[in-house]
Length: 233
Image (cartoon, rainbow, N blue to C red; front, side, top):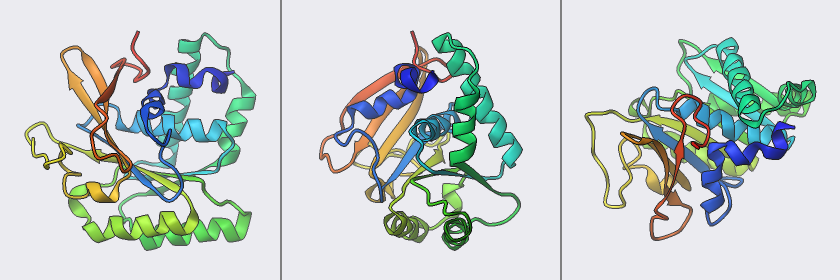
C-alpha cells in the first residue's frame, strides 16, 4: 500500500532532518520556489502524508478550481504508485476523499476571516476539524504582514499546522541576514519551517532553510526528480 512506503520516495523526507520531525500543531510552514518548480506538488505530498494517517485536512486553493486540485491529487497518487510499483487501491482513494476538504477562492479576495468562518462551519455542521491546512496560490506580494500574524493565531486556536506556497522570481535575489529569500525574507520570524525548492543544472533540490528555533541553518538538502517531484535516484 502506498502509505506504508510513502516516505521512501516523497519529498517529505526532508522533514526527517527537522529537529521536531515535522511542522507541528499551531505552526506555519512554507515552500518557496519559482513558478513551475514544484510548490503545489510538495504541498500535496504534505497533504497525502496527513491523509494516509487519517488526519483531517483542508486544502485551500487561491485561483484554482476544486476540480483542478482533485486532478493534481490523482496525478501525484499515480506517480507514487508507479514509483513504488503498486496497483491502484480504492481504499487509499477513499481515505483521501473522506479526510480532505477543498476550498477554492476564485476571483475573490482570500482572508483569514473567510477561512475561519469556513473552518467553524465545517466543525459545526459535519464535525470536521482540520489537523492540517494547505494554502496554495496565495500572492505574498499582495498581503500584509498582519495576514500572517492573524493566520498564526488561527493555527494556534484550532491547533492546526498550516503550510503555504510562496512564489519567488528569477530576477529577485533578495535575502535577509539569515539567508531566507524573497518573498519570505521579512516574514521568516512568523514561520517555523521554511523550505526552498532550488532548480540547478544538476536538478531540483529541496533545502531546509529554517528548522523551528534552531539558531543555525540545518544545511540539509535532498534532490527531486524534475518530472515527478519525487526523490531522485
